[in-house]
Image (cartoon, rainbow over all chains, first blue to last red; front, side):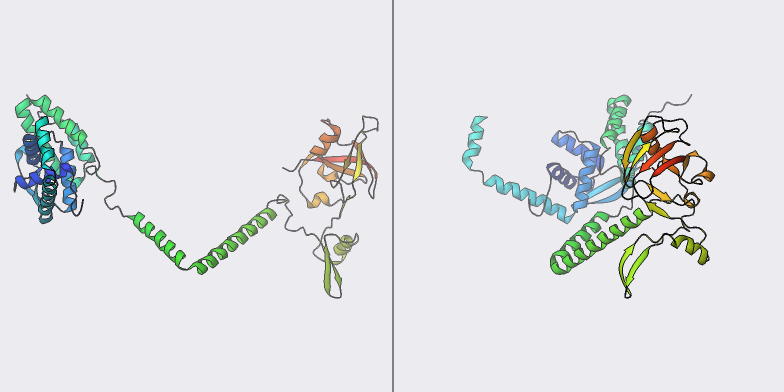
Amino acid sequence: MGKYHLGEFEEIVLLTVGILYGDAYGVSIKNEIEEKLNRKVSVGALQSALKRLEEKGYLTSKEGESTSERGGRPKLYFTLTRSGRDAIEYARELRNQLYSRIPKVALDLKLIEI
Amino acid sequence: MKERYSGPPKIFIRFFKWFCDPRLHKYLEGDLFEIFEVIKKNEGLRRARWRFTWEILKLFRTGIIRSSNNYRLNHSSMIKNYFKMAFRSISKNGVQTATNIFGISVGVAVVILIVQYTSFEFSFDDFHSKRNEIYRVDSNIVEADVVMSRSKSSGYMLGPTLVEQVPGITTFLRVHPLESGAVVTYVGQGGKSKQQFFEERDVIRFVDQSFFQLFDFKLKEGNRSTLLTEPNSVVITESIQAKYMGSIEEPVGEFIKIDGGRYPGTFKVSGVLEDLT
């Protein structure tokens, strides 16, 4: 896996944090993934992924403001770090490289099959 | 009237606070409350409460549960390092290691032997109350200032002479083992009862009267002050009594006959000792 190791869910979370630039905290990340990817995300799974990514140094967190609908609890905002960005780019490049090496015939055949 | 409580279930809020890592707790609780409010607005209180509970149960996992000790130290890597260092130095200095291991094995073996020997020596005959005042007199056979041999025995007259001439010695006791063995017969009081005889080796001792002043062997039958006071009396143990007489009511006063050895004759039982366990 080289320098950067990202699990599938970790990659999605990392990308989403990037998308929500400046507004990425627990609930907004969860909603974004649930809406755009149409899959259920539990608070626990998300929290574990965020914690792991933070330990790997791909994310940093900062305490934000607290609002009344949160029972007066502050939000914890996440932002991408430099190495987080590198990790996303590395994953993307890897995929593109692999994709480009698939012979055209294989892709054509698949189209016909459908 | 009081307004009815319409928040998330309190018991699960408390449960979550109990198990959650305190560094994460306030943010996660905020997230849960926010989600709760949204669901409550869209799908109703019941559904929101149910989802809240379910999320908390799913949060009960490693990484979120607090560690029991916040100052956990990593001892295992230190100990791993010890083993690694030990292994490296062992493989580096082969001869030295062999010498060390040989030396410590010999040392440990010798210690075990010494402990075994001394603990055995201290393990028996320790119920005699005068054990610190009783000594066995041995003799050395000396020729031209060289000890030729050592013996556990000495002459008959040594005991009385020592008591007479050496201050501090109050009593003597001579023990003469019947090493050759003898045929022992139970003859009963009048010599008429059914005769039982066995050959006995190494269990018969001729002793002085002072035997029971010096030693505290426990008495089962008989009177301690009159044991061995008459000539030709004998003290037997429980198991000898059972062997010859069976379960007899009154063993004291019975007679046994000893044939063979230096002093054959008929002896009167004056007491029965408890067997040593």
